[in-house]
Length: 247
Image (cartoon, rainbow, N blue to C red; front, side, top):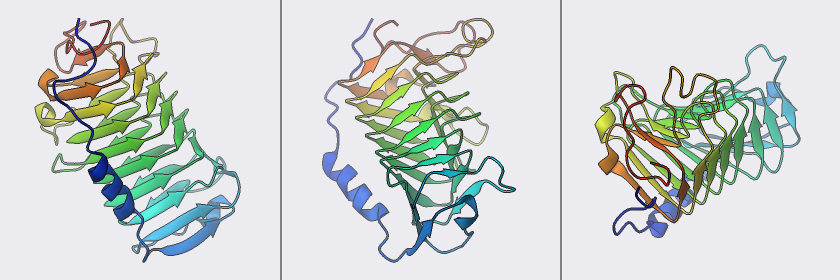
């Protein structure tokens, strides 16, 4: 058993602050949204701001398509049954909740102060053809999604966040053939990564864990609670990465 942290890993606070500042594109067009039809597709950066709770359950196309440099400000409201699709770099900012939906990106996804819960697939998914998509999650909760809480290509940073109650893995490197899985890096500090693998198939036909990586050496955690890990592609029941409390 190993403690869920790594040698000499110090969170790059300055880099995180710079990332969040850059994510606020002052040139983005401001659009206040009061219903699901208010998410207008554009190839230009837009800052969507919710004006109320929005339910896209009956919408014909419940997709919030965001061009690179765009942001979605939840403003304390809940967006239900919508997929936030990020092209390039995008930001989802709370407080607020994306319920029964997901955030899917093809490059760089940043989620700050938000809850993503109850989706039918992954809570956050970031993949692309070059295997370099990445995710940063700060002060957020990713919970109750049917598949992985967070799946990504190259690197994920989980900062002061909770990833729990997801169906398969909590945080996992993508094993898609477009990604070089052993290069996927998990970085986390001050976070709670427990109680994932809630699907009935976990432990029966599927191996599920709080963190899952093709390379145990690419997991770095400091000040985190983590129960279980899994070395991807190691079979069933497979091998742990020896980084969590119950490994």
